[in-house]
Image (cartoon, rainbow over all chains, first blue to last red):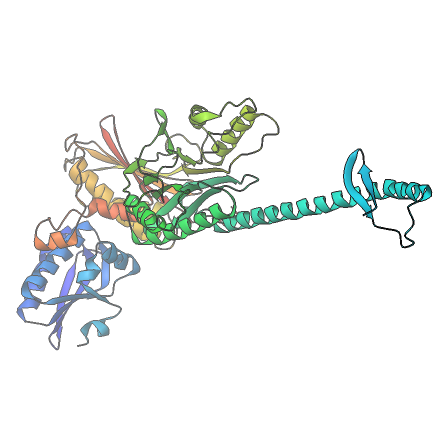
Length: 112
Length: 457
């Protein structure tokens, strides 16, 4: 794994941001920019697809908190999918899973 | 009535032979009298024996009833005592319970609460036999229900008191200590309803810990003070019932609290400490002593950390890296490689990776203030049961320990807290034990992970 790439795709007013690589302090700005772009298209929901996530550290968690603030401010729902057991656990202990709906796979996450 | 013949056995009058008129209406003759006396002389001992047998049977019935009652009391009591103690990693909970012949009202209990925490109860009902056993059983149930719902030990006891108090007989009350052990941090937070003070082994010797509160069932609206202690590595906390210090020698002298405390201070821990207490008691009371009351001892023991002192931990890896951002990832991968051979639990490798990278990142950014001329030391050690990873820095970020704020997602979302500050929180959640030592100008963060128990142990 290595540097983050975040790709934006739209499915019927649901924006999917696919993460490849590591989510750490270096990735924060790029992620934030992609989320802004997604929000600008006025979706009902933004989905983070983390199936390609390599490693996420505490700075990566801070980045997720940051985009959650962006989504909240814009009144857009934030969801996540593709979490490994380890990161699902981390979403639980940080209580991120109470703010970000976690779906087992991408089709559930994009269903309306 | 014409004739009365006394029935005498061993000089004691046990009955009379009463005769009316003879059918022939003649007077009793001298032969008649002799015959009757002989008869009385033989009947009296036989009657005496019959009476004794009847008395004996009566007593046996009474004894049987009491025995039966004692069996029931013992049965109730033993049914409500835990069959086995929980076995949190890195800890042992050892118990001793010896009911007196006339069963008293001692009890203890372990309640598994969420997140690995364990509720620990020791109590004593001021009565014996079946009534005490019944009060003990209901106290236990009420306490279990309250412990499941309420977090604070003081509130739990207050709830139990308010529920028991109306139902408990006037003359009875219950002394009870309830505490919550967090095996991860070693904290034991408790409240005490008039029970003996718990005794903690510390660096400075055994210390009794106070938390005041009235016994349960005495007065409505009682509140309970809470105390909290940290049980150190290789040290025990001892909870015990009255019968231990109050055991009497035949000459009337009591075993006494000072002897109990002194024995706790001798240095034994866990089950050995219980043995030592019982030996000290036996030495004091002498042969043939019978417990006047139940004796209950519960010892909460934290295993000794073998850090730096044991040859059985082998070193898997040791290195230093400069304080440069990104080093935490390299260390994380190296450590992951080094621990591959260990019997890790499922998901544990990921936890180790996360904890190590966060700890190294902290050491680089905070401990060494990002100065690349300062190194971060990493040591990885393991024994059969645990993995220990030490990460040390130079404490260049000032000598004050950074007091962390518990990260709160809602506060971070509203901007009251920075979105950052998850590092130490993550480490704590990943490890089984976290120790931070600051001596000699270095800060060492020790991450302990318990390994899968080998099946043959």
